[in-house]
Length: 263
Image (cartoon, rainbow, N blue to C red; front, side, top):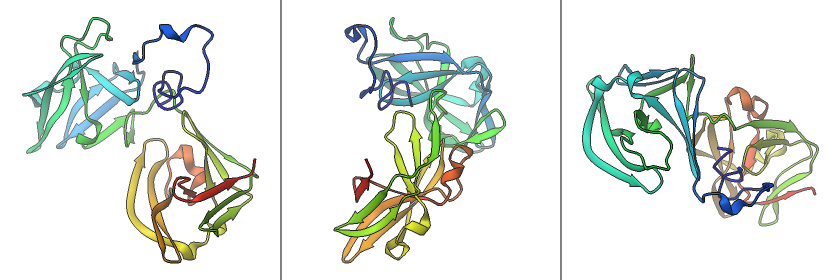
């Protein structure tokens, strides 16, 4: 996420400055690089791709994507379709469905057999829609969400900042011992110990989201008087290793509540 997303150096809202004339930079950046990990993807009980020669494509405003050498993909499980798309930066993509275990993932795979001249050398590689496959593994560990970005980092640090969350003047949470989660190219997030949150104002929610770096988030709505604010806060009940310190702490959407942070 860090190179081409958010405030990253080639992102749409980069926060830093280069020491050269940035007018020479293209407004849309493509960066195609080797990945040292063994990467596998599975569908219908079959290993559809298995490679130690995977490439990662970083592209402005988009999440990273794995590209597998065609030789490392079970092409006998692929069925070419009539679907086509055209990218002004990469060229025309052709698509394949995956059939395995009596199931079909339509147009789940694409390739650029004749990429544009100034695009990376994408010919001979195949990419998969991450969410259309059953499972993904990097080395011997299962991953979720989307491919891990080698330039992405999560730091969870204990802080003594005074953080107050309120709705319509009523304090919902207040602490001087938050955890601050710093995540590459994203604004800091303040996670509050559950003991410092008015749990009587929290309402369970069925919403869940997936982060490949932090894990599966559960959500809570807020009921303050007659006001219901849906999915106002989230927490990670069983976080991935990078976010273990934040287990059970709550973080509030600044856009949905009034959050004051000292300084």
